[in-house]
Image (tube, rainbow, N blue to C red; front, side, top):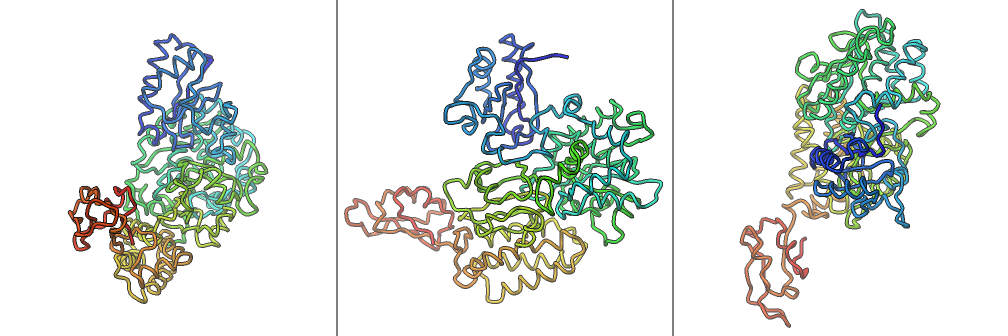
Length: 605
């Protein structure tokens, strides 16, 4: 075993990889070799650290120096100053990682991390996800060994039930109960499946877990296979996740080679293997019966239930299906006990939840919080607030199946039941933050456009009903809304919720219903006043120039792509040049003139 005095951890998740982190690793290795430090310093590629806004991220241990926004040109300085001479390059440090006395904080003291509790994300940003030995060094496959050598199948299911873990894929069904249902049927063949499709806009929780800690999912699936009596597992993952797919393939090969997948695992009679199935990015394949149909090689369409997959699932056999984050909690529950997991969270929502924090937020990234943490804590304490000092307006959780949480509910504890009570839902964990400049009618239209585009078309309520809703919303945002449109939207929404075939169709109207519930005045302004209060809907905007403020510099005219601005015959008192004016017939309402005017002379209404 080799020992190194310093370890350089470089994020190679999707976000940092797209910013060039692999090239940074290459330069690090070259510069370390030039400095003669290759036997003293080790460079490790890891998964996501969570604070995506600061990428590419490099953390140097043992000092825990958190370098952010690192460029290739910065690497030589870090090697020669920090790694060679022991002088931390402070101007490259993430500003939140240094306290008032200029002392480096540990990660759990940084504002972004200190209210988090990393369970599902425990190894992300800590280990090399492509090295099974690093996973094993952090108690990897110890939970599987415990199950196979110390616990009966019923014992395992009982532990999961007592933990209170609920499915992290959206519905929140009790995980232990689902495992019990899958164990009960007698069958010569059973399957364990993992939903890694993750189709919600703005969601990247499951992707990050698979990129940063793939073995945690493989181990948990093997434990599930033991518990229900299955020998084969499948991970259904979208092909648009190339890094996650690559690391899963490496992890599966390594686990097989180590005897941790395959026949007679840990010298027992338990045999279990896992294969990948790549999806083509159909949102509907996040629905469990559609996902199973796609694994079988059929068109990804949902089917009526019952029978449920636990009775008749993949290839007509009893099947257990959980999502990535659900599995990522299992090993820790087995090792630390159900009471440990149940001690976190709320009475009915135990443990932690991973959220992909995006939109109008300073600290874009991946967060894992104990259930019951308030939305205010997530937005302001962890997320760092809204850019530009803007006011928080709403947060959309649950993606196209969820709803918006307005400012009046900032202090609501986040858990399954509380979110449902205010018209939203947990969903898989996307959280998109909106500020005062967002139009909520346009937001509802955006999510409905996604749903209409992704509908499998099997049932009329989803195929036709959501399209009719979208037509009404489009008309409203174009200034063509009429009296009665709101009532039509509500009636259509109720009918779709009550009659669509699958959960995705039934929840498709949620973004419309929740925005109507909390922002009805915005809908009314669009319809009756032909006005977009947020100034987003282009057809409802108008631009004009205040002749008294205009100095006639012509900057607006020079930047107008439609040549809609020209000089007038009027010169304001104290000004030297004639004022400018906008021809409303030519104006395309792009806002370029307003952006360029330095004197506040252009008004948008």
